[in-house]
Image: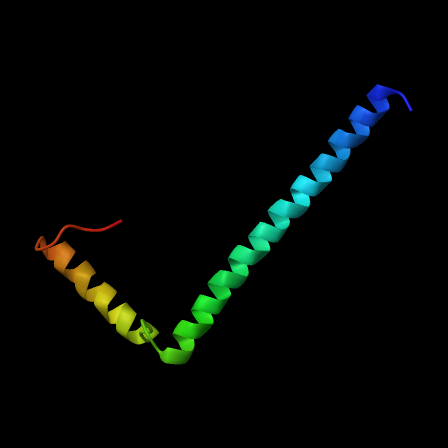
Amino acid sequence: MPITDIFVLSVIAFAFIAFAVVLAWGDYQTRKIARASRARALTGAGVASLKQSAQAASVGQKAAEKGKAPAHA
């Protein structure tokens, strides 16, 4: 087998291996996030209802309209 063919096949194989490693790393990261999220949901830590969040946002917006607090983007 010529050396150029070996080089081309090595580059192609390396590209597939690198792609597989990147996919595995991404999968690991998303599973890590899902585990943390599931643990937070089970303990109730840092969980606020949507109604409370909406009320807090509307209070901040009203204060910004009155000029008492800077508006956040």
